[in-house]
Amino acid sequence: MSHIIGVDIGTSSIKIGKMDKNFNLDTMNKQAYSLVYPKNGWMEIDVHEVWNKTQQMIYEAIHNIRINGGEVDAISLSTFCNSSVLMDMHGNALSNGIMYLDSRSKEQAERIYHMIGEELLYKITRNRVEPGMYTVTSILWKMENQLDLFRQTYKWGNLSTFIHHKLTGNFVMDWTQASYTGIFDVLQYQWSTDICDKLGIDMSILPDVVSPFDDIGEFEKIPVIAGAADTASSGLALDLKPDEMFESVGTSNVLTVCTNQPEQLDTRFLNRCFVWPNQWLSHGAMSTPGASIKWFSHTFLEEKENEKTDILEYLPEQSEIGANGVFFLPYMQGERSPIWDHNARGVFAGMHLQTSKADMLRAILEGSAFGLRQIYEIIESSYCLHAQRFRSIGGGANNKVWAQIKANILKTEIDIQQIAETGVYGSCLIAGKTIGYFTNMQDIAPYIQNKTMYTVKPDMNTFQTYDRYYKKFITLYPMLKDFFQVVE
Image (cartoon, rainbow, N blue to C red; front, side, top):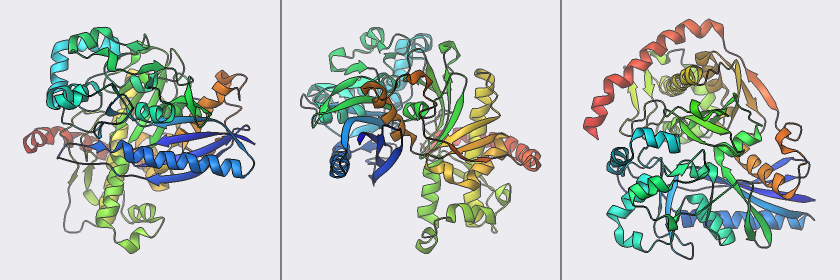
């Protein structure tokens, strides 16, 4: 039977799946990798390590499909954003990639604001400029601090550009990825000559912009389809329409809105082109809720506790609403939405001699949910979207206690989806359109094999209590903002 191979590269692992012509997804393999932290505030990715693991996993997937009598019709890619990579003419990375939470390019970000101006930046990119998150800041940092390395650069791109070149020999970036560079016109779907000229960026180093559905070359005589950024791929796998919203829960925790009205796009969010032309995604993105839970588990739970598969659900239930007076600011590596402060850090407040591990973990879950409520309130006001329910995907969506806390704090129903790995699924569906699996992909709902497993309903009895705690939570960061600046 024919299959499409989907590759999803997240911030901590690589996942491979296969989809057949009946649109059934089978996850085949997963491998972890580690990020690199050379200095305080720096975050990098060894792209060659990621490619070596990805290549091995693709070969294994091809072999497993063929040994069982099947064929591989296409390969498609989904990756996180952002990661700035300098490459030579052979596509080899000249150094590690700079990740989206890297804050070394603060001076460059401030200078871009002065040189371009907020009004023009918004008109062209529909985004703000933040160190690392929008890769133009990392390009300028390399130009100014590693000039000898930059002079060796033939092409610049994201991790997706690097992987695509390894697969096909071509330097490309799809428009969902290009949207986060700070030099891309998200309404015209092209690099901004105006911004590049003002910043002195030679446009010859930029990869070709392609549609997510473009056939960009071959790997082992198998067509490679460009694919899209992970959350955009997930949006397709959910058949997301304008004026709809979904949640993704992994290292980050994101509420994503789809719109066909670009004037709605709010710069407190991350804004990008969707896979479909003339539709845009707006992401209220918290950077480290999932990473905070993982940090807590590794730091405070003993090995025998971590062996219990349900410990992250069992433990917070040993605490109570309000975490016994403990609050947590979930800003472990700076924060994006809604505060946009790369200096912010995680904080436990209100701890006392009776504070337990259960209280601390529950405080992390509640603090992350309070942050999500701040984002949801922006969605209600800026996008006039009042969702009575939304779908939730990603590994963290399966934590039922956390989902219940979020439902209570946001006062909405949450539908937990059967397929959590929608980045893989979305990349397969993109390739399916390109090679002809679909007759009409604009009406994709009948094809998608991803149902709601269960719905988490809010407990009205918790609303008043959580409202009181939420009002206290939103006062905590403003009181500490100057402190974060000092310790930086």
